[in-house]
Picture 1 (cartoon, rainbow, N blue to C red):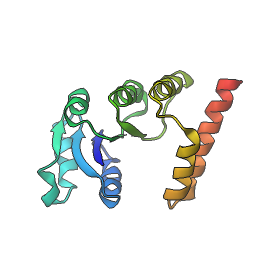
Picture 2 (picture 1 turned 180 degrees about the vertical axis):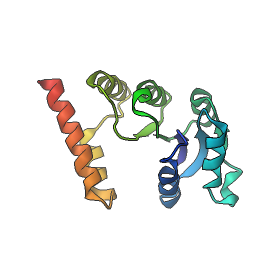
Picture 3 (picture 1 turned 135 degrees about the vertical axis):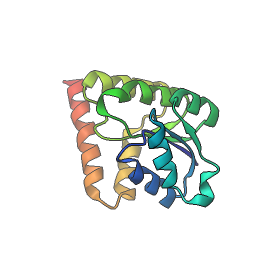
Length: 154
């Protein structure tokens, strides 16, 4: 599975490690800061680096690489547009927490997911429960989803 990472700051080492441990093919690293991109690339085993392209522009990365899975490891206030663009480009997205700072941002992302038939909360819940060794992650995701759903219905 072609994997890309947007945001090569402090948390990127965890995303790169997880991608490597789960057999993802890391095809792109994207960050506005060149030094961050270079540091992230150095975390990838040398024999795999030549197949990784570095980007400052995530839209160019999405268009050229067409990743099947993109991790958005970004600051809380800038995720909405980037996540929506990833979904529009046909990529599944892992979003670093918090997913959104407002219900409006969360609704915008959910709307794009629903439009692209990529939104199945039960499947996501089950995947989290079955695949994360720390059940706290699954409980946290489930709690966030249920809280947002209750707010939307309320």
